Each structure stands twice: as C-alpha cells, then as structure tokens.
Amino acid sequence: MQYRLQLDTKTQEFIAIDRHDSHRVGRGQTVEQAIAAMKR
Image 1 (cartoon, helix red, strand yellow):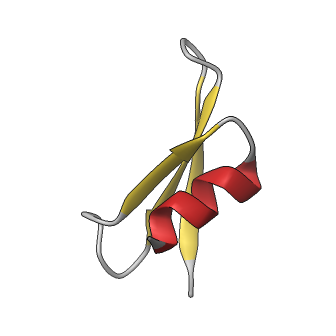
Image 2: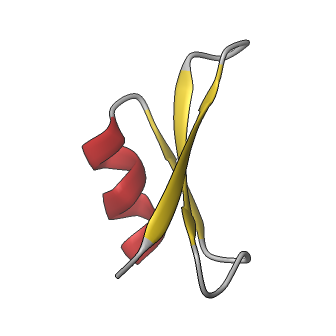
Image 3: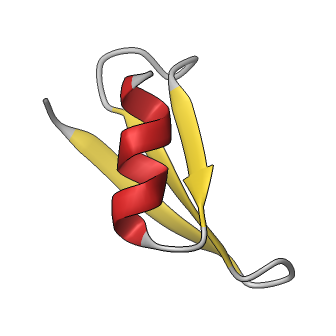
C-alpha cells in the first residue's frame, strides 16, 4: 500500500492518506498509529 504522510502542526497529529483513494485517511499521534487507522 502506498500512502502520503502529513503533519498537522496545529494539533501535532500525523495524517496518512492512501495514494489511490484520497477518501481513506487515518490520523494518529505517531506515524504508525496514523497508518493503522487508515487501514481500518
């Protein structure tokens, strides 16, 4: 799975976005948490 990562500097939260489906998004305090949330 390919994804993009962003960091929301206001909330200090990582955002993982599926490169092929921008509606699949996960947020988390760590990169790993954001990716896991996106896969759910």
